[in-house]
Length: 371
Image (cartoon, rainbow, N blue to C red):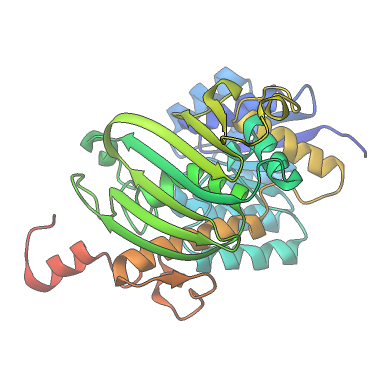
């Protein structure tokens, strides 16, 4: 393995950009920040002053001046694809915040460009990289926990009307979806990374309270190749906020409850009656590492040093994005949706809304007030 110092740039200097800048700063010299771009000059200047980097009027200017190895895309979802394509054309690897694109069609377009450029793309799904998740995947692979039987992933968050006053939020065209797409995706991406390939989804979605075009709640029943069954609930109308995952295996239940990030202290393991105690196995390697951008960025650098595709690859990302599309397709058509069903020509391939959310199409057809 060879090591080097990678140059990094950030596009979009809002709140999440700080997590990316901190991940670069904590890389122990393996990476350094060389520039930033934002459409709001005052915000860009404040970010630049904090992190001691130059700002540029556009991504094209930054790419030309700095030739960065990695570009962290921290902009609203609707801009991710064109910015990522611009990075790839310049030979820079995009590190893309969630959701990485607006649809499966966009993701497949990105994958074609990635292959043509020979430059990898990484999606930010940082919850996969906390030590608890790494340990859980290892124990499952080793057979310590037995077969997965039942699981749940609940993202029960609260976002008020003012949150959605930002023009791109709550829009199918700019955000791509509601909490299924932009909030719960971290929790159920982690669930999918544990349980493996899903096979079918039965779902509902509704707009209960928020002034959005997208849903504000969804719930899904999911089946997996392993035979496991899981429930996935996503909400932005829940005053007592929590993020929960639970896995019931043959020999133990493994629980996680946190809000926006976890450490080992947030996990709990309960052995099944009569089953071997798994506590000692759970207490083993790796050492306590919180979930977050720093942990994933270290894994990205490790992969680049080894000449490997950095996590999370576009192939990994497609599994999660196809799941998102299946939730919307099932919710809006009332059918069970199987893996591999949403292909080119399917309305949910080009847009997570398909032919339109039922509450919007009903309003357009008969003039009823949305609700």
